[in-house]
Image (cartoon, rainbow, N blue to C red; front, side):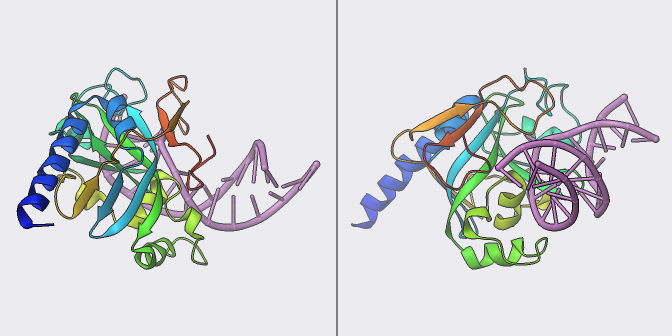
Length: 201
DNA sequence: CGGATGATCAACT
DNA sequence: GTTGATCATCCGC
């Protein structure tokens, strides 16, 4: 592969990613299933996402822009990171419609497993099994080293690296979990057959 | 395996 | 003062 070919392919991938984040949260949540994401080289395949739209009572953006959710109204591809329940951080990627974002809920770890284990061991007494390293939004963010300091950062550039799957993955839509409102929307997406989910589909 | 509980804090009312 | 887009652990079946 010569340099020109490599660059042309990289441009195509970047265009596809730009198209993906230009969609609304549901479209982006679907496009991200099967994609790979790395933060400073640590990451893996996205197997579970959850969509939040502004016209959605469960979304932080539903009541408009505030200090906390300002990143949700940033450019598509912006990272929105917030803290829940006092100790867990959640990593979202802003979608194309203002106030829309996709929560990354689970990864199949592919690279940097030692770094993940080291970070995740701070809360647990023993190093978690590989299946549990990134099975859940709080676990995923901790394993990738994503915290509040990255809120508002551009997730389309360093240290982030996102590679979409070549085709739309085979996935399942199911009711969102962990919410107290609007539980009926089928906006949780899971990679069919994955054993790395936060909970079975 | 399912339900209950405490940890712990940024943002909101 | 209250509230979570959660997790790890403990308890009972």
